[in-house]
Length: 244
Image (cartoon, rainbow, N blue to C red; front, side):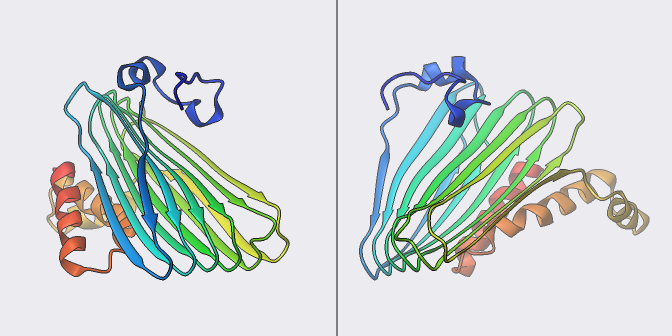
């Protein structure tokens, strides 16, 4: 894509277009997982304060292949991580995404997953926390082509608003042209559980630490599909540092 998008483009409706212009144009990073292979990828978007960053990935998962893709989006004034994923026969795609937004940041994750062949599966788990006056959109589309029978696709988006001035926008979308599929999506936005906060504080945990503990536990869902224990612990430690 070479033409600067506007908010008339559905995938950019919540973006900071002025910030987008500073990072434009964007070349897609190509990821191709060959037939029968398994691959993992961790993307940490921690750009400098005040910067604008766009990471765009063009992903193809061949027949019988598997890709585990994880994102932590936390840096810059504007940060966008976008994935265009095509799944072929029997392919598998697991995605865990985290957005940690504060101040006046605009941080977003956008996914466009196409099931092109039969028997493929995709599972997307995105967790978001937004504080200050930050904006944190998640747009997730799953398209199932006519030949893609026996598709199994799931999307789960949950967000916590840490301050009243923060905004979270969620737009899960399904486009299905096959008739023998299993597809589900859900999106919820809420606040920290006050009863859980009260319980921790009554046990002597300082309020700031209690909030951080509950927030970290909430975000950990998105990292559960990291199979390597050391890699998962490193990602969890990074998240903990961001919440400190």
